[in-house]
Image (cartoon, rainbow, N blue to C red; front, side, top):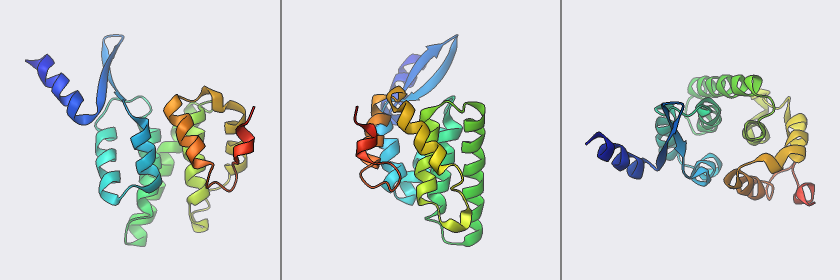
Amino acid sequence: MKALLLVLFCCISGFTAVEANSNIYWQPTDKTEYYRILKAGSLAEINNELAIIESSSLKNKDAYAGALLMKKAGQLKTPREKLSNFKKGAKLLEAKIEADPSNTEYRFLRLIIQEHAPKITKYNNEIIEDASFIKKNYRQLDPEVLQALKDYIQDSKILKPQDFQS
């Protein structure tokens, strides 16, 4: 019965259970949807994705949640809510980058936010460093993230398609 419920949950939530060292970790089956929401998701979609991520056992959930919280901040009404969500998200994402500075996807998430963050947040100190790091290491990205990067560079001011031709 428990196995049936687990399979049903996986089908409904869009997540797949992966057993590793006797622990179950939830892995997103479609990062494409995450990056779509990060790019242009509504407040409801962002909140839904955050709920899924925060209730998961993803080892990198803080990076994903952090970027979404900063994106969410731009859609909130009061300056206090905006600042609170942005700071919380930045803290989560920065902690993951500090713990794993060679993770190209984390750097990509931060670059996305830095390029679109209002100047008042002063969240753009690593934009050049992150862009350079991504240009050098983009081949390490999962196919879904690589596609998100290819889509992103079409509108980026710092990353250009010619940076990724080899």
